[in-house]
Length: 442
Image (cartoon, rainbow, N blue to C red; front, side):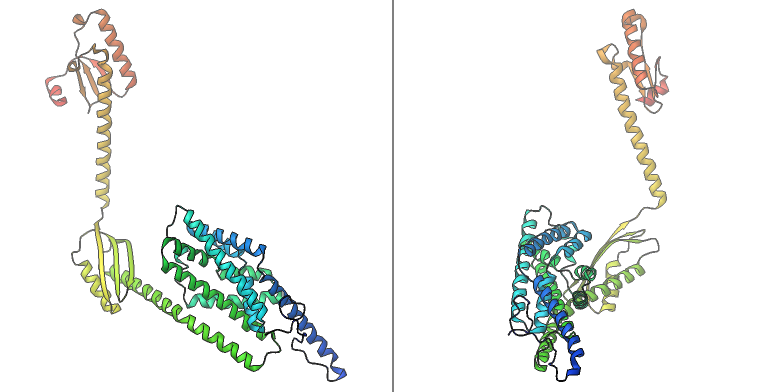
């Protein structure tokens, strides 16, 4: 199976026809010239596609860098970094090569593109596995989870992206190809496959592989269709065209089955979550609020877990909610709602005042111990001669100056003055407590 495009590396050596017809009359030279120009444009486009589908050092370097960027972006859950990986990725080249190869039935171009695509896939997965194996962080981030459940919507995006990509190639619109690369993620799913293989999450690996396959086939088939509509493969017969259409329809039809099942499952989860939120809100009081809510689809059952903050405990909340959800969804429902009593504004204020009071008492108790230690340093003053009223922040030192002597008395005065400087909010004085005050400090 060889083509009719001369000068295109690897596309055969047959004479170039490109859909033109030989001149039957001398006055048809103008039409033949126009068709010849179109055929030349198609030949140049095929040459460009074949060049981008080559497996060379530049392709390998770009796929390694793209895989590294995508893997790090997925681990960090950074959308901007993941988009950067999409822009660096060179996988669009061999995918377009497959599409144009199928349109023209060029075996050399198809074979070259498939080899390049397979090599790129293997390198991307291996690079991702190495980075994840070395990384201490292996959490399932939202960016990773987003690549594990492809649906028919992803197939639609890929088909439209493939159409836009072929249009950009034929019109040489590089800016459009940037948008196509962002819209149709290719390397991030391969990095997710590596994550699933390293961490043992084979469901993640299968889901991401399905997403990559969906994007790849949709882009390639869209390229095939648009290329045929633009008169690529002019020597093909109607039988060839019918075979191409049947193959594309059959492949996309088979691929749509798991994508439709996933879409239906996601739609069911969205509806179940909406019903749960509505019914739970109806059972709660006006001032009650939902702190967290998790709704999961488990086989034919719906599992609901959550935490609600309530003013009054409702003993039958789980049963009533399960009954209402079961009636609405016609499914078995398991509900586990934890109810926590929420504080009123008055209770919060009382608690804050109590906390401040406790903090103040603890601070005064600590200051009391420090003052006592400072006054009794050197044991010039016995501890039982120092009376402390923490609530009033007053310290009374009971002294007998005659018994102390002049030098000891002067030393005690200096100690009291030093402690007073350290604690200016306290009153430290000589004297004696009244009987009532003494009883209060005990």
